[in-house]
Length: 273
Image (tube, rainbow, N blue to C red):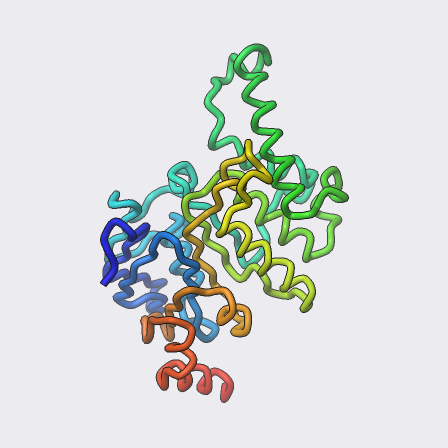
C-alpha cells in the first residue's frame, strides 16, 4: 500500500455511461507522485474516457475523483487546468490559425494575474508579467526543439510537429499532473523516440538548464500516459493499469503486466477481432 501523502489523484468506483453504453465500470485507482503511470488496454477499453473524467471534459454518473485530497468530480475543465491538471488529446486540439509561439503563449492565460484594464494599458506589472511568461514560452520552445517553427502557422505544420506543439501547450500551464492521451499515435519510429525522450526529461526535470522556468527546471513528477505502443510503455512506465471493456483488470509493474494472463487474453481477443 502506498502512503496517502504520495497519492496525487485518487479515483473511487468511477462509472461513466453514454445511453446504454458503459464506458467505465467501477474503476478505482491511485495516481501517485514520482511516477509515470501508463494506462493501456484494447480499443474501446475506456482509457480516454478516464482521462476526460479526470480533466473535467466528461461528468461520471457514479464515483469520486480526488486531487491532492480535494474532491474534483465533475469539475469544469478550466478549473481543472488552474489546479494544475494539463492534458494532450488523441486528436490534436490546437488553434490552427495561430503560430506555434501564440498557441503556447495562449495556454499561459490561466496563470496570468493582471486584470483586463492593466493588461489593456500594457504598463507596469502587466508588462513585466508578459515578459516573464514569454521567457517561459521560449524555454519550452527550446526544450522541445521547435525553434525553427516558432513563428509558423500550426495548421501548416507536419503531424509530428503539431504533436510537439500540443505537448508544449500542456507544459505552459505548469502542471502538477500531465495527462498524455496517445502522444505518439501516428508517428514514425524516430518521432516516437523523440517524444519518449521528452517525456522522460519532463519527468526528471532539467535543473539549471532552465533556471527561470519551474516546469522545466523541477519537472512534472506525476505523468499519466495512455499509449498503444507497448514497447514504449514497458520502457518508460513505472506502473501500468490495464482497462478492458471499461473495467480495470490488472495493475502492476511492467514486469508483472507483461506476464499477466488476463492482460494477455485481453490483447489476444483484440487481435482476433
